[in-house]
Amino acid sequence: MRTKVFYDLPETACYGCQACAQICPVSAISMVPDEEGFLFPQIDTDKCIECNLCEKTCPTQKSVSNPLFNAVPTNVDAAWEKDFDARLESTSGGAFYIFGKKWIEDGGVVYGADFDDKLQVCHCKAVTIEELQRQRGSKYVQSNLSGILKAVRTDLKAGIKVLFSGTPCQVAGLRAFLKKDYPNLICIDLVCHGVPSPLIFLEHLKYVENMSGKQIVDYKFRGKERSGWRAYIKYIFKDKTVEKRFLGNDFYAYSFYRSRFNRRSCFSCGFSHAKRVGDITLSDFWNAERYSKELRKQRKYGFNMIMCNTEKGRNLYNETISKFGRIELPLQIAVDGDVRLRHAEKAPLDRDSIFQEYHTHGYEWLVNNRGPKNSIASRLTPTWVKNLIYEIKSRI
Ligand SMILES: Cc1cc2nc3c(=O)[nH]c(=O)nc-3n(C[C@H](O)[C@H](O)[C@H](O)COP(=O)(O)OP(=O)(O)OC[C@H]3O[C@@H](n4cnc5c(N)ncnc54)[C@H](O)[C@@H]3O)c2cc1C
Image (cartoon, rainbow, N blue to C red; front, side, top):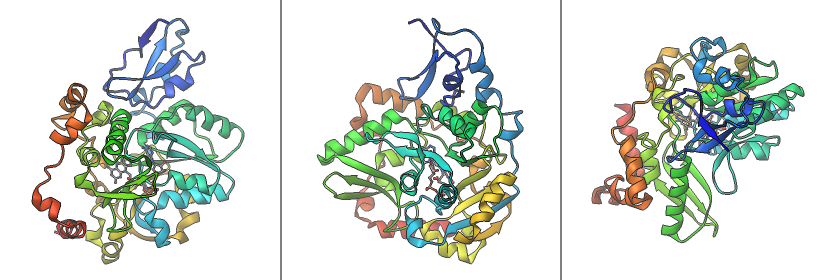
């Protein structure tokens, strides 16, 4: 097979959304991992018929002009699921689950990120509430959309109501692939500061399994039942034991919050602004508690920022509004509170060198040499004290 790389798209621009591969009428494009573990399109020139559909579909070519990619939010709420136990299962305020549940109860299907049986993150279709529950919670690694855009199109054409949830570049990839909006489609995009490498995540799982001598069967990037919002990484092992690690003590989480293993395109992301590609945008609502006593109360277990960007988005929110506690706030507070609504994340100085070091020395070396400085004071401080310090700092 003779191959070429994708037309003249620089590697730094490709989001890996797979729209090009799934639009190709002769299946000439495969998504192939690069040495950092991110998928990139590769064209089989023996099959390629030079129709240029791939190039025309690529969302990097469209983001500036397409009105579907630039919806202006009309209202912004800080909101949280009233059902406290259910909220514990979600990363922020549980809004995704409320919307997804309503959608499925009304006969629709939901596409979102789930783990496969090897704990790799990929988009899946949920038809039942049990399947939807698996999509809850942020998975801080790039999700694989293999076959998903085509599956969404098939469902839409069959008249099935589809809710698609993902990062803004994934929603943009879907919209570019579909070429038009469908009345039975609703898209939720997340405010996103970047997606880390699936290869590094796999290495991390192997490392934890080697160190513990136990197989990991489930993983939570932000468990919050003990100490609240954004407190823990939670490992669930096959022998039913559970390990919870404070974010600062876990090399993968520590690196994620520093954007060290993010895809290169995340540092020039064309969707890091307040004009949105989703009908609804969800995120944490950082710093909103400064503006409301009620939000200071709710803060411990997390709340969402919910932006409604289109009429469809507003309708779904209105239909579910009784499930939420909510406070409306000006858009500017959201924009001031999250840099990703203003511009793309800056690449950390060690972004490239850390991948080189990984290839030279391996993951365990990185953990031992590039991890958080585990001072004795930090190791001796109980998690609840760390959380209290965090709480106090965030109010200053
Ligand atoms: C990679 C990533 C980076 C993020 N960065 C920020 C940030 O910088 N600032 C901020 O305020 N919020 C960020 N978020 C969003 C935040 O973590 C919550 O997902 C969001 O607030 C929704 O929370 P929830 O409680 O409503 O729903 P949850 O139940 O927590 O949300 C789950 C939803 O997220 C989707 N999802 C989970 N993992 C992925 C993935 N890897 N790729 C695509 N979709 C996924 C699921 O399909 C589901 O729709 C990020 C999320 C991800 C996945």
